[in-house]
Image (cartoon, rainbow, N blue to C red; front, side, top):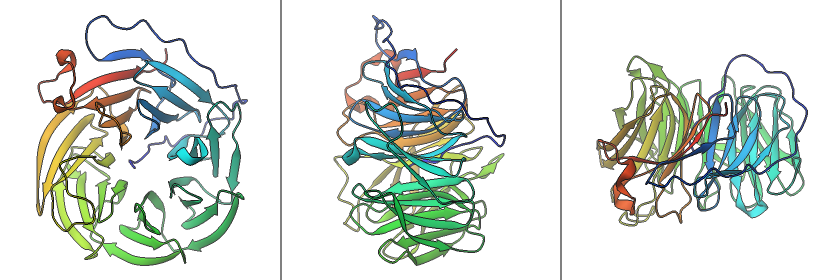
Length: 363
């Protein structure tokens, strides 16, 4: 998944509130994008794909929401975290989503339930990244330089490892494998074997640490911190050869979200060839789609939003229109796609990407 942003200052705890459905706005009579009132009044820190036409999101105020871009409505909203939410991990098998917070806890929120269903506590500092295997095991990393594995059926931490200076920034599971990629402020990329919670590999090469990452069967894509076009690059790493394949300048400021996009024309993740299509978003407000072929990368489409981006995530695999979601500093959420996905022309931008829907910041 993509990375998440959080402000440095703390926010006081707010009393838990009941999730509520927000009345949909009137549909716009002409084309796209559909714009409706979103769930966040402050910075939207994270976004994660849910079911088709839906996405989970979280805010700097500790709130969590389920939004339907297809209907133009906030379906549910939860409160409970005492500080900002840093990460989301969809848990479809549990009918909900895990959240990682600066309050040092992880929580599970389930649809149609007013309170969190589970709280996982143990980290001593901010929980900065989580990754769920889709079954029973949750990986978490923290600024306390530890990583942990949780059995979500019992809520117990079953394993933990401390690595000096491993201030965790991002994490992503390798689909159908007992492996998790993890980035750190120590400029290293670690591949953890979750059967033993030992590093299967530790890779180096960063100048600015990775803020965001995504993974498929063979590749890990990362987006780096940076400013004024220094750093701010995308890197692709090969799991089989355990080396960097490509580093390309991506944006003018920190790359806060990346995704490997679903493409029916792409060869399966287990083949050694084939074109990789990826997306990236930055604090500079730019969003780009890339085509990666071997050691070269080409920008296919780009779009400039009016506000900096805090995260990006690929849409649900069964989506036909939206390819990815983006969260922004002003609290807004955007559902984006490309012209080849049967979109109406009303929202076409000069660069090719389209904003299908926008959950605007709350007033």
